[in-house]
Length: 202
Image (cartoon, rainbow, N blue to C red):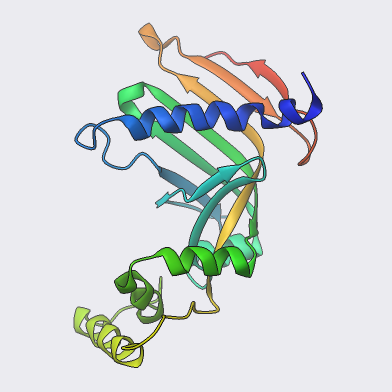
């Protein structure tokens, strides 16, 4: 196997599973791209939330957010992060650990332009993770930014962008009878180097 093929191998394995999950009926698995993202703050307190994956290739796993939100600020200050995909109908799970780096402005612009106009307005209106006095205050901001952008395209806010998690570890988990699960771990020291693999006790 070539070096390039060895680098790509776990991403291809992940894409196969994602394709299987995506092919399931939405009544069975409503959101196949959903994953849990774990970050850590300056106080070393971990936090976790559910996001949607927007891209994956040999460079890493891409998602978008407000950089001024809690998760955005934590990733900019402490870029080590972890994610977990759980596709219960497939009895499969994938864990990823690595370093999150901001995507390019061009990547952020392209994805922002693909969003629904209401979601674009929402990115301007929501001061994400900050205290909200009342629901009316949010709705008022939505109305204000809707009025500002009645005509033409809605520009991307400077603070709204994305991250690419560059994995150092990817673990594939498959459910087993009597909790004797199968676990295959890919690990590497840096991007663009070959992975080492090992199986783990369940």
